[in-house]
Length: 319
Image 1 (spheres, one colour):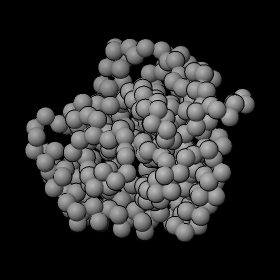
Image 2 (cartoon, one colour):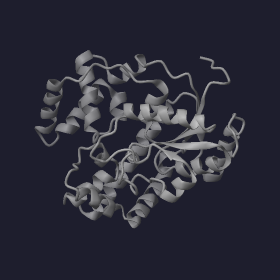
Image 3 (cartoon, one colour):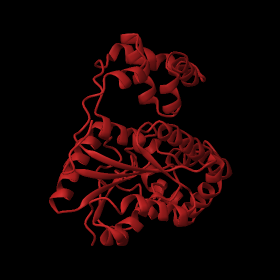
Image 4 (cartoon, helix red, strand yellow):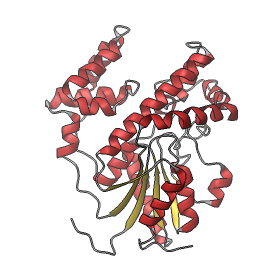
């Protein structure tokens, strides 16, 4: 579909964890009249600061950010809620004469925002209860359910980690109810996309192993900044539990288990790094099929130069 030149424009900046998305966004904000919209399922929660790499109050004061600190960790936030909130704040940004710059690594949020929400059958409590009972009956129940999903919907299984039990159960529910894989529903029943021009930049290292060093370095920096103490405060509240989306976030889940006495500090670090690497792999898998994505290298200087070359010709007002 060809859109007229006056169709609203938004910039998207996607990338795996620890690839430099936030730093590049700030570079762009220094040069163009953009406002940053966080596309991060952990940054929406208050108190999840260090582990989500949330921008500091000083950075937020200098560079306008949106969709940060929306919810208490006890109050789950959905992808559908993100879409509603993002559309509202994007309209506000444009009303100020600026361009939305959506930055993050929660690929499901990006997908629902750009492509619309798929109409799915309603959840059936009885079926959900049966699947939960099956998963919790034995120690390997959850891995077996994930393997079952892999057999009927390998694409969904690739995108849904074992630890995301809510999405795992939902994907199996949809298949059992309809006989159609969830991924096929998404492909065939997408709502009409927005009349919107998207310019999409994606940081894509040539080799995923190149992220191993930055991931390890950033996690150790988070520990030095007090990541464990941050989770300790959440742990001690008494009203949170590990099945909440906020606590399932990578790093938070592993530290929570450590604080519960289920792992040593060294095991927690190792499991966190493994989980972060797996997250990066899933993010890159999503990005490979992203239409119209303009790839950027991992190297900072080349990344910025190419991003500026792509962005500069666009009708974005300079500061």
